[in-house]
Picture 1: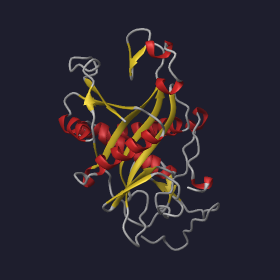
Picture 2: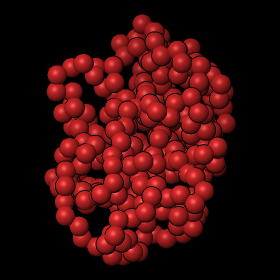
Picture 3: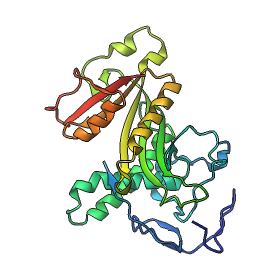
Picture 4: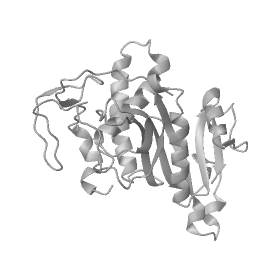
Amino acid sequence: MELSKGTTFLPQFRVSLPYITCPVCKRFRVSASFGGWKKLEAHCNNSESIRHSAISKSDSSRLPELSFNRLQLTDEEYCGLQRRNFGRFVAREAVLDEEYWTAAWLRAEAHWESLSYMRHVDNYKRKYAEEEFYALKRRCAGQDGNLLKCFCFVAVKEEKNIRRTVLNSVVGTLDLSIRQYIRGETYPGEIKRLSSVLASPEPFDAHKYAYIANVCVSKFARRQGIALNMLSLANDVASSAGMKQLFVHVNADNKPAQELYKRTGFKIVEASSSPLSKDQRLLMSMEL
């Protein structure tokens, strides 16, 4: 897709365009685009100048300028990022704010998909996406609890000699976080008693673990191995970070997701998981 005449993106300067309401969320003001928009439906570097900026709590009162007619960066601009190519897609770490927002919108679509019949559901999705965008930026900036590091991975369509816009490129997303057990935590998110993990004389790395969350794939892009390859990339990154164990929570009634995780080597943690628990989630883990 070519940039419209008069619309140019340079390393440090961008030509100002009129503002319009974002056709995806109908709230964010973004640079005008002359191309069409496609509604997204979801199912459950060597240059610091292209890195995303951190979002602090004080920033949440003003929305960023997001240009969804912006083209994806070139392979050279993404040089240095861990990535995994498969078919017409590539899984890699998100870089642009527009990628973070699209990931947040996919998660909103997934969260409200089963409740699409509700009145004003689009308003709920917009609110959810906005909150998730800022929460995601804070997590990736290391500003959230026991998170030591957080990665937002996206799956992007890539075709030879074709550069797509961000909106029409991102088809999947997941988060990988490196965490530290907090005192009293026996499993991720479960505090039952004083933890012997932190009280032990083991090396500091023994108190860390990797955790996967927010696995979403666009509805039109399902059944193409996108989730499987994002999970494989997360596995590789966690291993490279020196992690020995990778965890994920899954809803007890989500059998397809459980089968997906089992295919990649996850097993249910019987001591932690109970279908009768309050949140109806199972904990799964795999050794790295």
